[in-house]
Structures are given as structure tokens and as C-alpha cells.
Image (cartoon, rainbow, N blue to C red; front, top):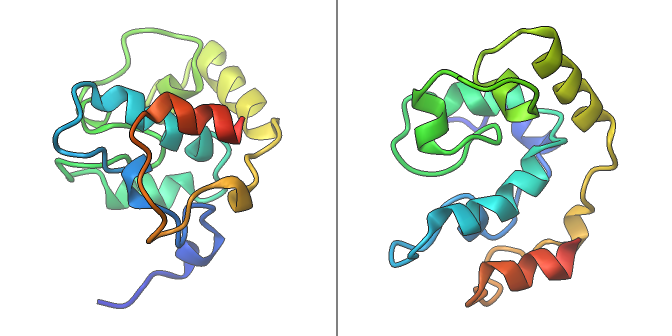
Length: 128
């Protein structure tokens, strides 16, 4: 399978996968997903990423976890709700504002092959 062109613009390219695929033994995968969400929030290629992961059972795609990708949004006013399909004014505005915020510097993220963090909150502290 050929790598899609949009991948070259993804800030997660070449970065440690545990931010998008929490360790199987993780007690709370959402803590791990929060690290990926920081990167995905301002990603310029979130749409094709989300489309690729639409039917995936594991991992974060387009800033959404597997559970978030399956259920439509029931809340309003968060950028994640917009990506889940809500196109109300509140969700659209939240998404637009988030996309205009300063993206995380990919150089601050661990690369593939770097040692894994034992505690996800420690990594958030390091990158924020």
C-alpha cells in the first residue's frame, strides 16, 4: 500500500506511536490520548486522517478516539464535536478558534524509538 501524500504534512509523522495508540496495559487510555489530542487539535491534515481511521477499532485518528469516532456528538461548543460531525455555530467556531491557535512544535514530541513515558501527564508537562 502506497503512503498517501497528506502524511508528509502530518505533525505526527515519525513520532512515538504511544500518543495515538496507548499501551494495552494502560488503566486509563484517555490520559494517553490527551497527548495525541494536543498534536491533533491544530493538525492541518486532520480530515484525511479521520477518514482513514473511520472504521479503525484502535488508536486516535483526526483527534478522535475510537469511542468518539463511533458516537455522534451530543454536546456543543468543542472542536472535537465539530470533528464528530456537529456543524452548529458553536462547534464550528470552537474548531476555527482551535485551528488558529499555535500548533505544538513537533520537535518537542518523542520520536519513534525513544523510550516510552511511564506516566502520560509527565509528557504533557514536557511539551506544554
